[in-house]
Image (cartoon, helix red, strand yellow):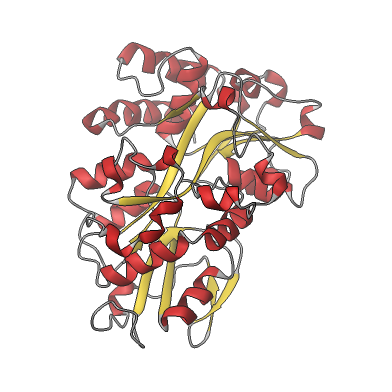
Length: 364
């Protein structure tokens, strides 16, 4: 996910390095000897930006007497492009569900040894045995959330409840759409009453035409930075991932987030080990560490996405305000309107072609 605010979080790697920015290539990292957490080992993590709290990495380093090299990416496509030619040295990656399925099919992921991850017992059953990875053989859920509408209620003059509203003529040039063909076309299809995973060319054409027809509303296609544009007042509405909007809501009282009444895309970002990871066993220790209820809760409390850790919620380790927020933890009624974006294989090209047509028409 996916989907984030660019913050500078400082960790100590022998010198001070800005967190959330790519550091030196993992190719040059000290790969250690046996992946068991010996002094001098480096665990190489490739994650979405600003997708972890300030304490987890230093705590893991201290507990296992290792160093963590932490690089970031901004999209699943960027992650896949980095791994597909051959793993450059990463031990942990964080793909979204449909990309997990894609990477499994391509043989890009290592099978997990569940014996090394006993904290799997803390997972909510809703996130065990997902359709994109039966039996969680290759991936473990990290965070989950929804795609929705972030908006400045002062600028809009009232609440927004429908996908249709963001294309109202009064918001001309004030809407940031997400630079994500599957997600944006998916929610447009849902608004039109179609399946967000359809491969019907006529239905995809309808969604394409709808966006092009309302192109005057579009200010930009944001590569997971819509929350920044919204917070800075450059747009009044941003289609974004839930946690990204909740992060800026903590500082900006005028920002709101809504899951539109027609429904939206739900996603799960997952911890996985890429093929030929130099420290597979150490990576499994990291996954197990993240699944500790206190650690898992701390991450979710910081990033403002949903935790798949049942124990974290049952023991009230998640902030009460977040647990009661139905945009983070939707009610059963809202949950019925949420759909996963599936890996469509070769048919993904239908969405890529439609997106290209939209970008040309809009000029973005």
